[in-house]
Length: 113
Image (cartoon, rainbow, N blue to C red; front, side):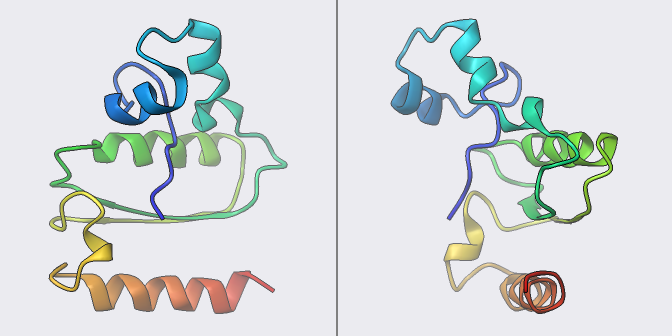
């Protein structure tokens, strides 16, 4: 599953925005559905993976979310892979698939009880 983290203009995926909010969403709706704007000390710890060569959703989207987690002292683990494209981990050809899945499994076994 790939989350939609932000509807902020420079970070959003236009197709997701259109599907969720319509073609002309209000600024209030875009703000409401931008998770990075609602991070607080009560936000659950997070494991985030992005691919730097994703041409559909910029890895800056994930980095912005991780920065919000950090500003609010929320524990997170972030991995930025140089290649993999958009939703690359869903495909067996992802060059870092085994590494990424191993990191995710370790994180889940360590932090999710």
